[in-house]
Length: 63
Image (cartoon, rainbow, N blue to C red):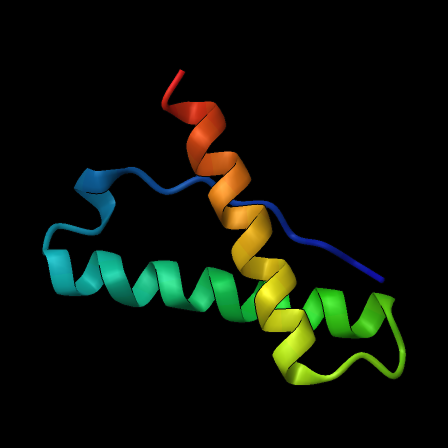
């Protein structure tokens, strides 16, 4: 499995709609990675796990 890491700042994505699109692309990629790493996992389970990871990161960033 190959994971590409990129950095994007708010100035790179100037509108809220573009920021939402970028976030959705990242979450979709996370679901794909979870499904690839866990053969047999359902899409629903992968989405649930992705949501758990996103929430954990968000909470950690809130301090």
